[in-house]
Each structure stands twice: as structure tokens, then as C-alpha cells.
Image 1 (tube, helix red, strand yellow):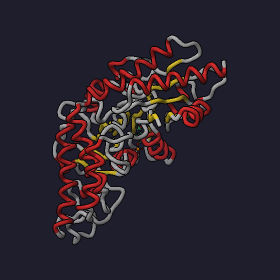
Image 2 (cartoon, helix red, strand yellow):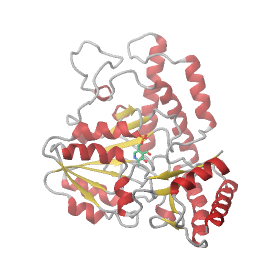
Image 3 (tube, protein in one colour):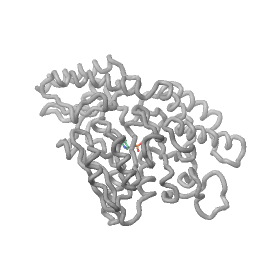
Image 4 (spheres, protein in one colour):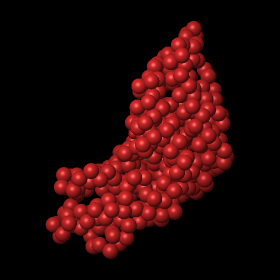
Length: 384
Ligand SMILES: Cc1ncc(COP(=O)(O)O)c(C=O)c1O
């Protein structure tokens, strides 16, 4: 199989990730606990090490501010439901994945919050438009760093300071950027950073994290309460991070794999990893430019792009059919449809069929892209 669906989850994982998972599962897979037997303490140490590594990689304020979650959706819900209060105003964009759009829309429909959805153009949100949407009741700006449909990277360096100046919290969904676009919390005023561990940080599925910055202190509430592997005497959830937000047995095996994935990314360098993927996509863009009937969605600017690209096939060929033919006849895995981003597909006129998204990863090769383009050419000849 030629796997070009890394924007959904990365595959394969780097070898050290498999090794870490295997080693941990065989030797240390106890229920973590700060005051338990030595295997429990060792498992707890793995969680601590993961938090330290994330804190170092992203320049956070302290390791305990990293809440380990099930995935990016879990992290985003924790942030959104944790900080919003009745009467709050929230700013978001039309680029968002349903993991931001749905919780916000549900709160809006329930009359809890009011919501402004800023429109993007050619895949980019203008910082000025975000600035204009802010008002004195704006409690949160929640937006993606890179579109999971178009791969376009948003100007968060311009947006985050505007949000800070307005006194609102800034929640960044780094699902498509963590691991490929540098994020430095020391220089970017991001209050809440959410990402999956299983995409470009190369952990297994079932991993993710939320960074809860100092401005969320005393404000963010848990939406899951329970055991924390430590002090059990308190009647309610402990107020210290990360335990305030981490009830229940954590995915410690996943954390062992995530740590190995992050270490691998640090060694390779996010910018090198991004350059490899964007270089492969540039070949696809060249082919599209020279081929009748095909188009790409969004503006192609390699400097502000991650490794995801949406294609619009010629009339007569739906993204769904194309995805099935590529899978069944050519053993190529890509993702057709709406990619959980219906507002964006409406905005770019591709609703309800969507687009065909390809997303190479660090182990994708020139030959695989050549094979993919050859397959597109063959399929197109068949229908035109
Ligand atoms: C931009 C974006 N946000 C959020 C998510 C949700 O991530 P997860 O599946 O880890 O919950 C995705 C997943 O594709 C995404 O691309």
C-alpha cells in the first residue's frame, strides 16, 4: 500500500516508536501512580518524561501544564468546555475541523455563547478580520494553525498578539502543524495549545495533549473527574495541574510511544520534515498545472504549507469514486470527502462531495508520488 493519508494519522511510525511501545508494554505497563509500587512509580515517570519533552519542544512554562489526552478532539473539548461561561463571545473561522466547530455550535445553539465565524480566502484567514471580530465580551478565539483540507498555514504570529491585547484566551488547534511547523510558546502568546500525538509527532492513536498556559489558571475546569493516581482523600478533583484535568487511568503506553516520536522529530527537525512533504506536493502541483481538468483547492504557497493538499478532479469523476479506484486498483490510500470540515467545503464550493486529499509523510518517496500521478493519469484517460 502507498500510504498518503498522514493528515489523518501518520503511518508508518519511526522505528524507535515501535521499539519504545514494545519495550514499555513488556516491562512497564502498570497503572501509573505517584505513591504506589515501583512499577507504578516507573509508569508515572514515563508520563512525567513525556510532559518534560513536550514542554522543552514547545517552550512551555512548566511540564505540569501538559495535559495528556486521548486525541486532539479530547484536548479541544477540554479547552472549550473548560474555559467558556454563559454569555461569552467566541471567535472562530470557517477553516475549522468539527472538533472545534461542533462543540462551539452546540454551545451557541444552547444559548450559552455567541459565536463569530471569520471567513477565509483561498485557504488563509486575515489577521485583520480576526481583529475586527473581537469585542469586549470575547472570551476565546479558537482556530486551526493549518487547514486539514488545504494544508495552508495561518498567520498566527499576527493573530495571537491581537487576541492577547483584547484580553481573550487564544486556543490553537495544532493538529496539522505540531511536529512540522515550529511553535514556540515563549514568543507566541498562545494560552491553550491542542494537538494529537498520532499525526506528525508519530505517537500511536489514543494520544494527544493540551497545554494550559498561566492565563487559564483558576479558570479552566475539568469535564471528567475521577482518580488521579495520587492523593485520594480529597472529596473533589485536586486543583493542581495536570491532575485537575486528567481523571482516570492515562494512556501510559501511548505516552511511551509519543515520547519516542517527539524525540525523533527533535532529531530530524520540524522544518526538514515539512520541507520533504511540501517538496513531494510540489510535484503534484506541477502535474496539475500541466493537466487539463484537474485543479487544486486553495492557494499554493510552499512557504506557508504543510503536507496536505486537496485536489478537484475533472467533471465526471467524484472524489469518492477516485478514492475507491486508487485504493482498490492501485493500492494507494488517500482521503476523499469533507474531512470533517463542512464550513470550509461550503466556502470553497466543494460541498457536499468534497475533495480528494493526499498527505505524504516523512517516509513517502518520489517514486510513490510518481506512481500516484501515473494512476491519476490512467484514471483520467478512462473518463475523458
Ligand atoms: C485540524 C484538525 N483538528 C482536529 C482534528 C482531530 O484530531 P483527532 O482525530 O486526534 O481527535 C483533526 C484530525 O484530523 C484535524 O485535522
